[in-house]
Length: 99
Image 1 (cartoon, rainbow, N blue to C red):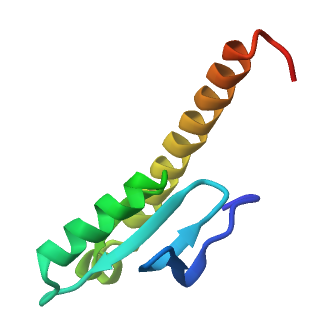
Image 2 (tube, rainbow, N blue to C red; image 1 turned 90 degrees about the horizontal axis):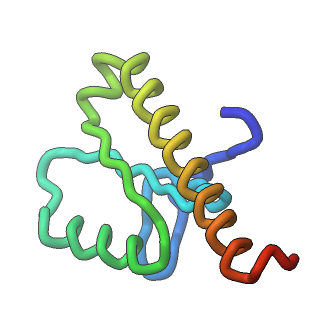
C-alpha cells in the first residue's frame, strides 16, 4: 500500500478499530454478525467528528473475495488522498498563498 501503513487493532480516541492509517485519517472495521448497529453508528460518528473516515468490510467478503476487498480499500485510500490534497490546497489558498 505504498507509503501508507495500517496498524491493527488501533485505538483512536475512545474507539477501537480493526485497522487504521493515521496518515490518511482512515479506519477499517470488519463487520461480523452480532455487532450492535447502534454502537457501530455511534463509533463511526465519533470518528467522523475528528476527521477519520470509516470503511466497513464484511468478514465474509474477506474470506470469499479478498481481491475485491483490496480493490475497495485501494479506492478508499485514493479518495482520502484526494480529500487531503484538496484540503491542503484550500488551506493554502485561504492563507493567500503564504506558507
